[in-house]
Length: 114
Image (cartoon, helix red, strand yellow):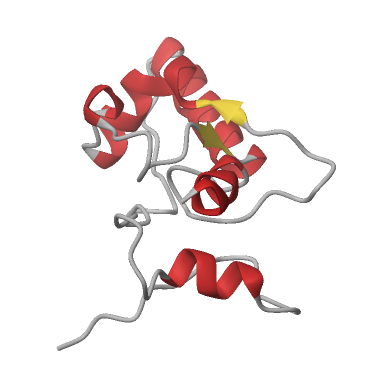
């Protein structure tokens, strides 16, 4: 579980991308209003063991553009319309499984069992 929490520190709360090792994420609390408005996600109900607390640089820039558009009374269209869905840690946790493999993809994808 501690390994899982460690992986969450390096993931973006919105898009699920993984930060480069040298880059630190940006706190979701600073963009709570924008996350709620654009993605209908309330970070106030986030669970620490499930949801990352940080945003990647791309999502932060997207929210800053949104803020600027609103301030200038312009419309804003977000090119990322769906957020990444994080799930609780389990034996088959895709977050831990994908991150522990060498040469992993930058965005972690969960496979839905239908």
